[in-house]
Image (cartoon, rainbow, N blue to C red; front, top):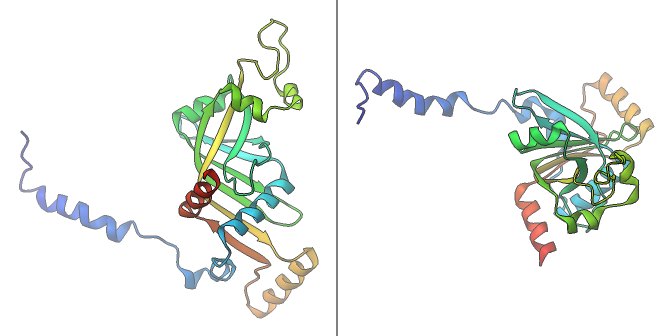
Length: 226
């Protein structure tokens, strides 16, 4: 049994107290009027998901970011399958099991997937957990012939690049939180508002910043699964 020396006891006490003062958020609404003005928390969860789907559909290609064992973050372009319901919040990707991204997911399942529409300025960011599956029924459910081009037929009788290829795997990203920006003005409206506020000292907010929280995700998925 180890006894903590009396010299260290006050230090230990301070150790538990300090985080409450030091590890406080640097976010301050009064100093960040852009976010304060842009945030819209009055939209229903179903409406949020509907608009989110529109953003993802318009962009098509997302950037899946994983963390390597070295701590470095790596991103690559990925195209998710179409959602199977109006309330689906998860993302499903097909990928080659022999690629490095699987090593990184096994090292740390926390991932981010982002989408950005450069024409409208709308964007979406998924933060969640990646799950790997080679379930045959799930693969068959989402597979389409166009995916074969990403695997190729190795002419060995096994790796044919079809849905039965052992390299084929699914990465399902189950979000814990989704944040997105939906543009409410076009290019002309954005330019006009930005120009006016640059002169007057106002804040340009040509859109809405929305968050689909963990509780909202659980609620909508629970309703969908019933």
